[in-house]
Image 1 (cartoon, protein in one colour):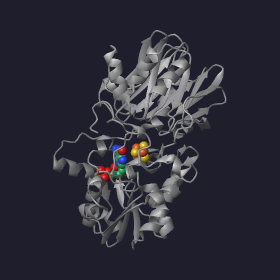
Image 2 (spheres, rainbow, N blue to C red):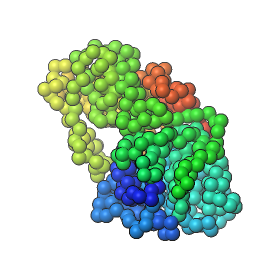
Image 3 (spheres, helix red, strand yellow):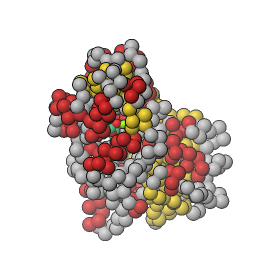
Image 4 (cartoon, rainbow, N blue to C red):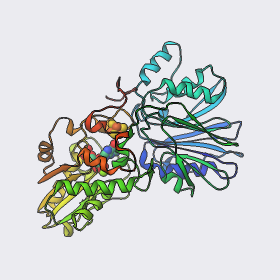
Length: 457
Ligand code: 5GP
Ligand code: SF4
Ligand code: MG
């Protein structure tokens, strides 16, 4: 998911949040929402679909609006339903609160069960709802204390933007799984965004990353910082650098593009395939493919073209329809690949279905050989911290060796980036302060239980 927040006495906070969510659209395409306040009223507009579908006709607006938060959703727990869209908004004894969450909690089901036993009613099946309930039930006096008390009970991955009638609040879990940064404009406007690309779109200046275990509270007096969870083992998600984040973002001081480019370079050093050209599986494989070509001294060419208008297609679950879906999305350029030994770079193999189809497509277009290079290690284990579980249900690397995967996708060669190689690519952050659990099963927070809601793990 992607989260956003704006505090401004001068700018149009609704419009800025809309632009911010647009820039974070890659972090979730299922639903979007914006919550607004003018200091007295609070309102939320949410819907299913892309940002420009949800806000097709008009943006939410209030006469004296000055705080907004926003969310784009990619479901990890809870079904894709209108009831599960965010920001969540509740009334409680202390006032109104709206909250947007990116991540996945590992003890949500346990907390939820406890609260339900005490009579709390839940309206959604997403784990994020435990935050608002814990905050509402806290006996502490100030909102800062209420939130901190609640966060201390929660385990797992979360980046939050929270809004009260007079404060914008951001928080990042003590392990720092997901990114969250702070930006500002010269006129005193403050912004919270999952990624720096969400600051750039509003011409905001990057101030800093929110620290793992930190809560920031923004009001007319500026930004106050509270540390509520220092000293935990850090575990920022390496998959943000591999696939999830946008390459033009910088997370914890590490450029995503630079990390991906280096993954390609190291992949070239490790794999040593004899090829004529390097192509990528657009768009997610492109940065690593350019790094591969640079290191190998081979031309990087467009061998596959992606249909730009693909979005989310409604596909009937028949084999024929699934085959058509890949062809709708990608097509090979015969004049580029014919008679060539093609090195194809993608960022990851999940189920192996796309890769298999693309290899066949390239052969049908006349490729002499197809070597597949993947800029991540094999994904053998599910993620419990907020990367889509549904797509990870049938992880091919959970049951097949590299050689068996190569055979399954029908490539002439297959190489996955090693974990050691991957660690060299995130050298601006401490490589040991990251999570690699989907590759090596070293889960930094005991997954304890299956993720809450109706996900399949
Ligand atoms: P496969 O065909 O192996 O199942 O999928 C591989 C493709 O899925 C890769 O091109 C990769 O970019 C993409 N991918 C990797 N992780 C995710 C994810 O969490 N969500 C979605 N939607 N795509 C992913
Ligand atoms: Fe990221 Fe993988 Fe860890 Fe999940 S398990 S947080 S995807 S590195
Ligand atoms: Mg891809």
